[in-house]
Structures are given as structure tokens and as C-alpha cells.
Image (cartoon, rainbow, N blue to C red; front, side):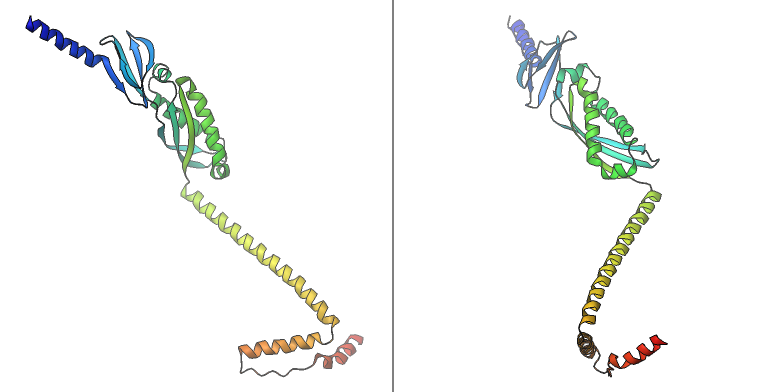
Length: 250
């Protein structure tokens, strides 16, 4: 009797060990009973029927999925390599297990094909300058595709755009040309402003008889400060006025 009792206690312990499951706060257990879906349980302590129920654990934490680099031909026929990262989480554990064989792999494939499809419709300039808009578009499309699997895509970010070496050289020359163009425009605008100021100054000097002489003396002071060995002999411009008038009459 003692032997039989010990065997019974042993089997009871084994049954209890197989019946008790402890799930973490971020986990849910999808239970199948004789192949049929019972539902999701957890977190905490749950009981299942040994040898009849099957428990599949599903994590509800946000998954960071690294999308491998994809070769993409943009709308303006430029070949680039683009990689991205997708953030998603399981919202319905039952759908994530029943509706798709492997939701991690399926989400990865959807992200890769969507990345190639969407970026192929954009030009290179848009791909480099409008990433926020493209990220939102990618997130919306991938989220709609994975929604039947009980998955919510929270964010998609393009990490890096790899350009061919030839395209990098062309873009570098273009940027250099743009900077040179802006420098010339700024220089021309400065020359124009300077000419306007000089014209105004010439008008003021022309109206005042002694202004030109004062300006001449100021120039002498500036030259003497820089080169003390320089000797200047000022000649009044009025001395040349009769000769200029005579030449104009002839």
C-alpha cells in the first residue's frame, strides 16, 4: 500500500508540475485544448490540463526589427542601398499565433517588400530630404498589412541611405557649385550696395565745395599712418578746371 501511495503521489506531483504555469507581466499564454483555441491567459499563475492543453507564450513588449539593406532604384533611376528599423508589438496574442505561422518573419518580409516598393516611387532628392514623410507612409502601409495578425506597428525609421561613389562625387561637385554660386551672388550684392553708397557720397561731395578737399586731407592722414616714408604733394584739383573746360570746348 505504501508503494502504491508513493507512486500516486509521484504522478500527482508530475501532473501539478505540468499544470502550473507562471507568466511574466509582459507575457501572455495562448492555450490550445485538443488542437482548438481556448484563448489567451496571463499574466501570473495559470493552470492548464496536462497532456491535453498546449501553451504558447507570446511577448507583448515592443520588438525592434532591423530591416536588412535593400537595393532600391529610385524614380530618377539612381541605385541606392537603404536599411531601416521597424518598431512593433503584439496586440492580440491569439491572432499572432493562429493567423500567421511566424509573425516575426512575416513582419520582416512585409517591411522589406514595402521598403523597396515605396522608395522606388520617390526621387533621390525626396529620399534624402523628406524622410519624415516617407517614414510615416511606410509605418501606415506596414501597419495595415500586419493588422490582421494582431500586430501594431508603432514606428518606422530609415537609418541609412548608401549612395554609389560616382553619385557621391557628383553631389559633392553640385554642393560646391551651389556654394560658389551663393558666394558670387553675395559678392555682387555687396558691390551693388557699395556702388550706391559711393554714388550718394559723390553727390554729397559735389554739393559741398570744401568736402573734396577734406576728403583728400583725410586720405593723406591714412596714408601717413601706414607708410611714414611716403611723401605726397597735394595739387588742388581746381587748377585743372580751366584746362578741362578748354578741352571740352575744342
